[in-house]
Length: 191
Image (cartoon, rainbow, N blue to C red; front, side, top):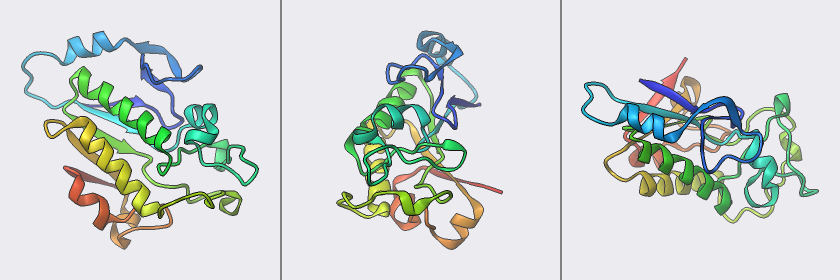
């Protein structure tokens, strides 16, 4: 059972301690109700799908600490006014690890990362990467390492990527398969 717990825009479908103002869907369920449903013996696996680096709410709430910004220091806007987290920033990684930890604690067997990678569309020339102390590939690898440490070995960690990115071995999104695949339990490929 794949359950989207954090949507494409960064909205939460459960009541997360990590959600900033406005980021919780009005129909969000409590963590205790999810935990209750996932407890006990099951013949099926429960997968928490987390839209990872696109996050309109948290990136805007903590621009300096977690968001991809413009040279002005203000949050960068992608297509459809999307905001993104900057995985080279420790606050962004701490936030995503916190969300993954909540999902592990609720009893999910696997954490599936969607929207994984740097933005590849929009006015990319307006992004300020001048303060980065590592490459995009290194930042994404560090994020996966910290997520792996957070969820432990008993919870599977997976990434979902588009087929063209997998077939090419990487892309402008910064994903370098050689860096992240050894740290993952599964790699899901979409059309």
